[in-house]
Image (cartoon, rainbow, N blue to C red; front, side):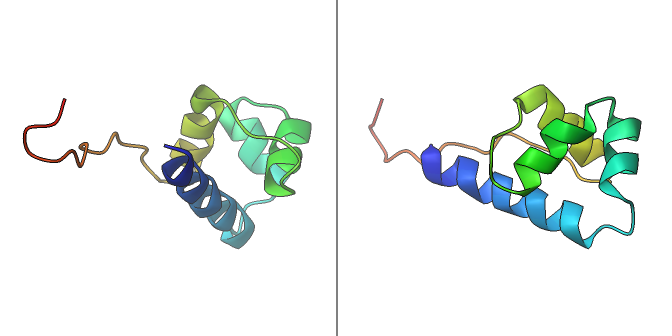
Length: 75
């Protein structure tokens, strides 16, 4: 699960950095603090799932659960 989480974090960081919106505006429209968003972008902390979903929504992205890639017969 750690790999998947880091992939999502990397994609979200990239979207934030490439957005024409300022971090302040993203945070404001997402209803989260600018400081936590900045710390996330600078890899100082992570975001909660709820905050990540809010940021994704502001950026026009969707967080979706993926189907598990379990082997046949696995639990």
